[in-house]
Amino acid sequence: MTALLETRGLVKAFGGLRAVDGVDLVVEQGRIHAVIGPNGAGKTTLFNVITGYLRPTAGRVLFRGQDITGWPPHRVARIGLARTFQITNIFPRLTVLESVQVALAAARGREKDPLSRSDRTFRDEALALLEDVGLVGLADQEARTLSHGDQRALEVALALAIGPKLLILDEPTAGMSPWETERTVDLIYEVARRRGLTVVLCEHDMQVVFKISDWITVMHQGRVIAQGLPDQIRRNETVIQVYLGEQV
Amino acid sequence: MLVLIVLLAVLAVLPFFLPPAELITFQKVLVLALFAVATNLLIGYGGLVSFGQGVFFGLGAYVVALNWRHYQLPFWLAMGVAPILGALLALAIGAVALRTRRLYFALLTLAFSQLFFTIAEKWYDFTGGDNGIFGPMLPPALVNPTAGYFFILGVVIVSMLILWKITASPFGLALKAIRENPNRAEALGIDVYQHQLIAFVIAGFFGTVAGTLFVVHDQAAYPQLLSWVKSGEPVLSAVIGGMYSFLGPALGAFIFQYGHDFVIRFTTRWQLVLGVVLLVIVLFAPDGLTGLVYRAGRRLGKGLGR
Ligand SMILES: Nc1ncnc2c1ncn2[C@@H]1O[C@H](COP(=O)(O)OP(=O)(O)OP(=O)(O)O)[C@@H](O)[C@H]1O
Ligand SMILES: [Mg+2]
Image (cartoon, rainbow over all chains, first blue to last red; front, side, top):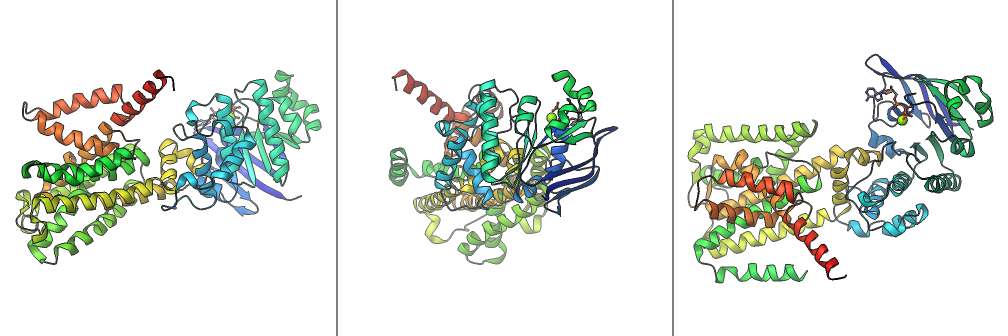
């Protein structure tokens, strides 16, 4: 296996606080890779640095061997790195269909096309994708009118629409009902396997984590304190002490 | 669709019913309507509030007027060249102003327009200073108000069709996505800066077109056309008419112009009246009149059991 994404000595400091403190992460091709850890461990900050939303204080980010450190988010997205956000982040007044259509247009380099009709561009593909995530019935609704769970599903649809090689999901099931959680997890699992996608996923629901991940990295206070197969992590003393103890 | 056809028909026969003085007022409405729809590409679609679009409007008027005064190249050439200059100026201003955050963008566009206002006002030898430039600068074919009206109408319709095409395209949709959530748009691979810059150039181009049409209406160019008051007109029109619909700002321009002419018959405090009206809109109909009508229509639809 080869590394699709790698960080080397990544640091992000906010003033005196080192939210990410020397993280070396290796994400292997084709895996579902969970990043877990207590609140404030630095998971979201790590994702923000990887995807260009924050500039690292030190360290490198490599994607398929290419140094992408400090690239702006839109360039990171273009080379096949898609993400969702911990706090729902959608286009409130666009319809569900339009949201996916604009994502598809961006992925195919058509987002500056001033001549075609946007309502006819990638319509069928967008509907097919919405079918996949179970939102096709809501295609013509404005995104802001959707339930929380459906908005989270739309987040995933947007990320999938750009046809990524790597998908970074920041707590995709946050605030979902058990039923919605199950639906979303199945969706992620199924799509990842079918498309051969690599997924990096941050999640507090340990049942979900142990069910779908191939590999787990545990963070605490900005540092990686353990990594390994799910069974190894489950039995790791340090991890139980700082994180799992409170959960199980 | 039917509404549009009726509207076009009315616009086509208007000169045969309106007295010349009224027709000339209506020319002004058409010019402002184009200015407002062009500016709304920034506000309603790109999520950008510019307080300096007057710089393009004034540029359009000045290019035509200065050409008449100093160079005597054909009028039509000046009409054609002006929007290109407007687009280039927009490229320069936008490249600087869009690098900054939102509030600073509004302030920087304002600063640029005041800069050009000051130049136009102080450079007596070239621009005539605060007297502006007045004179018979139109070609014979456009002097007659009816001819002028049809020329303005034609250019406004063609310009609006182009703008409409742009807003309905994937580029227009990407702009809307940026308006809704620039952060999220970036994560999809959309270059927000580039999109906004292109939108700013297009708005500058058509703002300049509107400025050249002003000369057809008034045969004049003067510094106030570049000022923040002029810059405010398309913004207010968009707010009044509704910035989330394509023709909302044009409706707003109509109301703005006639509202202005009506109000100043009774009071000199136009600004005060305007302020109150805007407050009411922002509080009770933030998406403008078209939004209000749309929502009322839906409620009515529900009431009728649809
Ligand atoms: N923009 C910021 N400015 C200052 N401090 C920040 C900023 N973003 C995050 N932090 C701090 O950095 C630390 C790590 O935060 P981060 O959001 O990355 O944690 P997390 O692991 O995602 O936590 P959670 O599980 O609650 O989402 C926290 O102490 C947080 O308060
Ligand atoms: Mg987080």
